Amino acid sequence: MSSLKLILQDPVIVRDFLRTRTPYEAAKTALFFYFVATQSLKLCRHVQARGLTDSLRDSWTWTYKQVLLLALKVPSVKKDVQEQLNKARLDIEGKLVPQGADVSRHLALPDEGQSVEWILAEMEKMDGELGPHADWRHGKLSGAVYHGGEALSKVIVAAFERYTVSNPLHPDVFPAIRKMEAEIVSMCLRMYNNPDGAGTMTSGGTESIVMAIKTYRDWAREVKGITDPEMIVPATAHAAFDKGGAYMKVKVHLVPVDPVTRKVNMKRVRRAINRNTILIVGSAVNFPDGNQDDIVALGALAAKHNIGLHVDCCLGSFIVPFLEKAGLSDGEDGGARYKLSPFDFRVRGVTSISCDTHKYGFAPKGSSVIMYRDAALRRHQYYITPYWTGGVYASPSLSGSRPGALIAGTWAAMQYMGSDGYLKSCREIVSCARTIANTITNSIPELYVLGSPPASVVAFGSKSPEVNVLEVGDAMSKKGWHLNALSGPAAVHIACTRLTLPLVDTFIADLRKSVEEAKLAPSGKGTMVMLYGLGKSSAVGPDMVSEVATMFLDTLYKA
Image 1 (cartoon, rainbow, N blue to C red):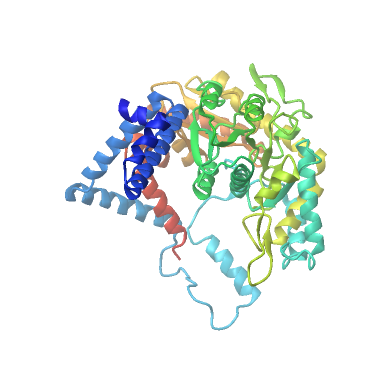
Image 2 (spheres, rainbow, N blue to C red):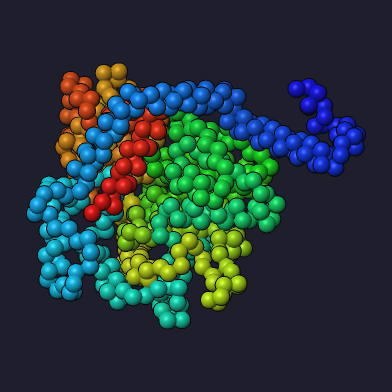
């Protein structure tokens, strides 16, 4: 190994060595040296970013996993596993796909068109085919439905009706839709304190994030010559960053968060930065536990190294920009300290922000905004080709044709709510979340709140060996609540919305009962316990969970 190192480091030795070879041999040898050098450099960067301990742990886990996967190929074991997976598939289909002779299935076009009355009646019938199921109107949801009220729904439907056939791909045909989209972006930029910035609308938070990754990849390739890009992402950041990395061929370095504050470990972020780093990510707030990363510190790092800093405010959306005005950005409440640190374009180093209008902006589902510090950076998001036989093709984001009705609905929602409406909504929703968090901290000793969430999300774990928090989550499910299970650590969260407001006392009462049930009579058979417990059961647990998730996705398309 020492002689190889000497050869790689001394160009004179390499030159003399190559002179003794035929051109073919020299080419092969040079290629070998290049391969070894580049792979060694990648390995060094990987270990530097992950740390030696985590790298060794990852290697051991991978090796152990391969051994277990081989064991699963033993016929008897494979048969048992397949039987369990088949059982899981049937269970999923039983919950999602209506069964029975009275179920109507529309698998081919009708010979003749149906009447409006028939269509509405059939929709009502389909709503009841699975029997009793979640009705979002009862409010026992974590996030999922961000309802601005019946009056706002009527405004959105009216906008839909007016612009049903519109498509922003044709601004000359639908000039009002073009104007509305530009105004939506402008309103969001001002909300995040960058009136001279730039942005576009997208179909949701995931597309906003994927577009940001594409932008930084292309920017780094053109400006810095980076062809093997990497980005640094907190472990609590949205999975869309992993998805975007996979789509855009950008390596993702996941960095752990502090177990107490739930902020990304800044020491590990600094260590992970290298010449191929194009982007650092921070959340305000993150989806799992609703906490905020140290955006100011991340911004200083990004500015120092001339790399991007994307702040994911998809969930914070129309909550975090109003916390300061609501008097909720810094102070004590119920004995707990809540503080929202600077997060928007006023922070040096922040170069882009994603904001979902379809969450706490109460716009129709399928609308989000990606914002950039300036228009020059936004240009790297565009796709343009002048070579298509159909003419010049240019689109600002992933989609070509887009539903103008969604843009109109979003614009209408923002105009209807106004700053005063969003301020009122922020105050009510955040107060609701803090009531839940303070109650857990002060009067449910078996549980604890993860970090100090400043906005609308509260995640709780168990600090009692007698209580499995996933059992608590399953007990809450039996009481009609639809909450989110988390891992790393095991926890359950609720994202409060306007639907939660009248049910906060019910939630707390049900939570107390669920803790007692989990302590005295754990079932061990609930969805959270079984699915998330399986994910932690062995090195192949995540693969089994992935297989179950694949079955779930397949079932979505089973008519």
